[in-house]
Amino acid sequence: MTDCRKYLSESACSPSIELHVKVKELPDDILGQCLIYQSKLRVIQLDDTVLNQYNEREVIYHELFHCVMNKPHVDGELDIMNSYEVEENTQQIYADWSYYVGKVFLRE
Image (cartoon, rainbow, N blue to C red; front, side, top):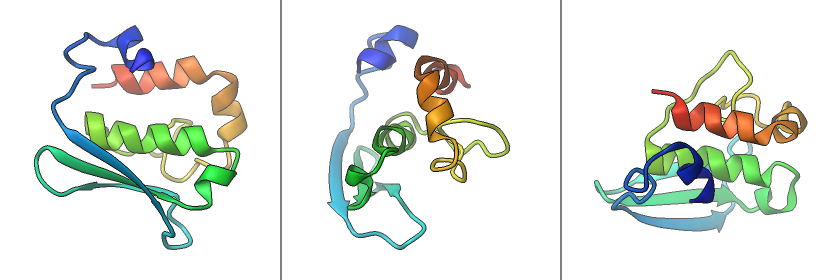
């Protein structure tokens, strides 16, 4: 929420949804996913290996952006929402974390 408030209004940072996070084994190529069961119920599923890896924060933010802010994937550029570069570019994204988080928050 602190990151959200840097870029958006208080009301935009307090969505009226019910959010649950579950850790479970997911298929090999999926680190996380957002499931929308009803208009206000969202579930983030994280692969049980994510919590032991260096890209944990990036995967969690990626799924939060999907579930809470309805942000789509952005492929073809270095971005937290790039579904194909999560593991390859984690160090570069973490080096300038505020820039990449802000980029997603401010994207229309």
